[in-house]
Amino acid sequence: MSFDRRLAEIAREFPAWTIWRSDAGRWWATRHHPLTSAQRAAGCAMTIDADDPDGLRELLREQEMRTADP
Image (cartoon, rainbow, N blue to C red; front, side, top):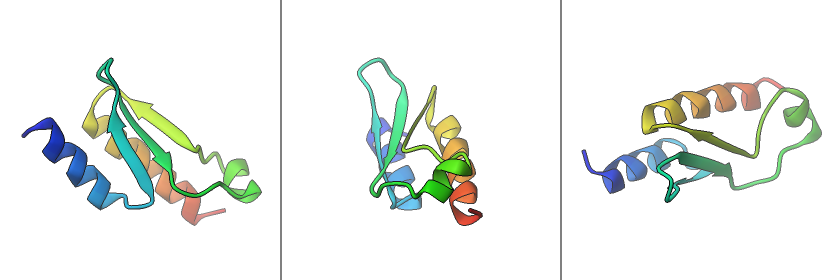
């Protein structure tokens, strides 16, 4: 699957995030909205990165779970 297609898939799956791949090849995501103090206390991050798209998806799922539970 092409880089652009994987990027678009992840962006559709996680619409509250902006997804991109750096020139160094790392996959990144940053939230569209600031975190509340409760979300920060729950371990939520504004920006995350991973080695590959599957790793980024896993981190995004973890972040979504943390966001839902503060």
